[in-house]
Image (cartoon, rainbow, N blue to C red; front, side, top):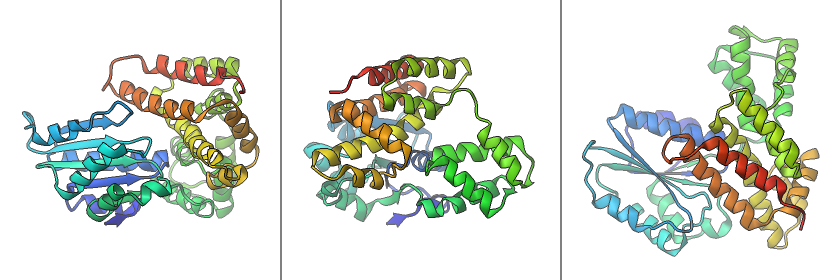
Length: 337
């Protein structure tokens, strides 16, 4: 069953299904979908949650062992399997097909996938998931629909504004839902419910803090190690949460991986950037990053962010801010090849 993100909450109220597949690269939509499933699981008595991230050393036998184990703390469990690369490999493909054909007793499984390449979409394992799982596509919002998306978010906090102002907001965030949501939340904190004037919105949006995580992503793309270090320190000094910094970094790095893959296949880079929704001045930043960074480095960076996310949430030991600093500074220092 295919399900739009907007339909997910209503569907979850009917009870959790044995298998879900979240497919897409949009970080905000992905995180909100995961949060909605977790909230529904808790409300329905799923007191145990486990998260697995698939990397090159992942042992797929863990899934079989998990299915054979008995929980000591809960009669119902939630298992999340995050596959950042979208490539489970031969063993992973077989394991996913097995999950689709036979549910794990008393367990709801969530498979988290990025936007898939054609080969993965046509694979036997994904076909099996699509047939048996509740599949939710968490894609980016089309630029033409972004003003309406922002209007809906404002309405959720009791605010509304003119079409002209909605278009201004959509232009400012350049299709980035994380940035759009951040601006909407800011307006909710600054102004009471009701109509927002054009001037009020412009003042709030253009009056930005000294440092933000999107500036960090730009500094990394350009390869400006000194500016990267300054922004990292500024974000820490301003008390920014490590998790809030990682989402914009994902928004920067995920399109780079897709564009780099297209480049290696001999495809037109400008077309690849357009498909990845990279426009205007950001195209020159992306070109500079592609000249410096290899596909291996970019894929490793995405995997590292997945590990840092676990650290930030207390699943793994370590200092999330230290690891973010090392990753960003390391990427920024790579020189053009």
